[in-house]
Image 1 (cartoon, protein in one colour):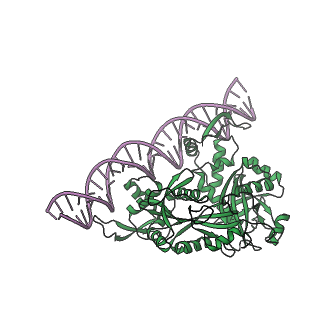
Image 2 (tube, protein in one colour):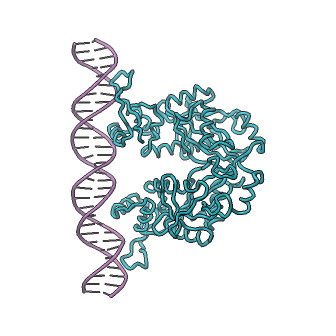
Image 3 (cartoon, each protein chain N blue to C red):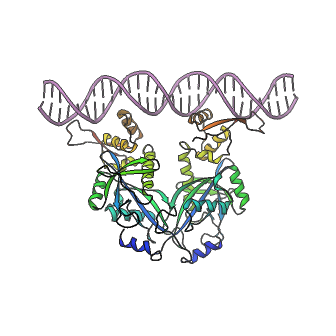
Length: 238
Length: 238
DNA sequence: TTGACATATATCCGAATCACACATAAGTAA
DNA sequence: TTACTTATGTGTGATTCGGATATATGTCAA
């Protein structure tokens, strides 16, 4: 420990410190497309721009606790039902024009129910489609208009989708976007939405079943006008 | 922006803030084993424990800038020669008994030259072998004794090695641990050290060459007592 | 100069994987 | 009962991959 560290260690007021926030990418699939939930900013800076839900980290709460609190406050979602995963920490000096703010970005994966329930729980949230555009995301509202994104949040959203694509094959993140019981077709649609490309049905089916992550429930989907498909759930021991 | 955010935004002293540091996993291969460089702590807390080199983030420097500064200060290394990659941000409330400190952990990959030059540049650094042990790392000094690790740094080191293993196959991180020119045997040794398992030579060779990441230089290694191998470098356009 | 030796480099082959086309099964609705 | 739609299962050729084997090429010692 050098002298400066010693001083700071025992005199918390001695040095300026950056503020620390968490920002959440509330991610879901809407109409077969990757989508995020955003909030409109009313005030400067970036007034009338759209931003990720976020909040300051309190002194007595862990980073994941802070993310879960934002999940509850801004989207009325219980953390137990949402896959939450740390994405990256953004700390460019000028990322917020007011002051130095470091933000720990989190990826929250919502199934259709959670996505809808977040929209219902907070009317200020809007769903927006995500299109990758290099290391930025273009974000499109339900009417097809590109939204102006506040701060570096377009980068954060792009990183979220990129990370998701990378992990889809070798991890179980795909299931976090589906309800407890789902058909192979629904799982394939989720994968196709995230990857942005159609997949071969028998190959996808075999690949998923061979991984051993899926257990057939013995029940079938209902309300179809055609042959109903078997419902699967995620194997517990994974 | 809610009221609390508004207040904090314009009155930086209104709220307590956590301190922010960067911690660096200086990673290299030593005697065919994954190794990290550590510093001994002299003072409380964790006196006589071993810790990752780190430092506080200044108000006017970015996170990566801070990591590069630590690299220069604590290991006398120029950032240009070192692969630096953000690992994860650790923010448990009690991770430092003195005060709330959030640490952004970085992975720095050093080739043999950089590893040796860091050891020479700062005699306080010691090299230590890393063995994965669940989500913690066991860290063993050159004499074979397990070192006591300060704070949550054993977790950080374990995450570094785990991340490296995961990225080895589909990214070019492996090359960061080698000099500009290297033989396929040296590359295989690096992979084997990180994965902790022997690899089939012809298969490894073909896999690497087929990726198109390698360009033969036309020159050969020197000073061997056997047939010298072709030297390769990383293809520029990757 | 020559032969032993260690390693690099190239070739070969069976096993496994994968995409894709196709065939069959199972439900709905007219 | 029949047409229709989708689920589910099977078969096949192409490609990949691991591993063994064979060949080439350098150093070193006799």
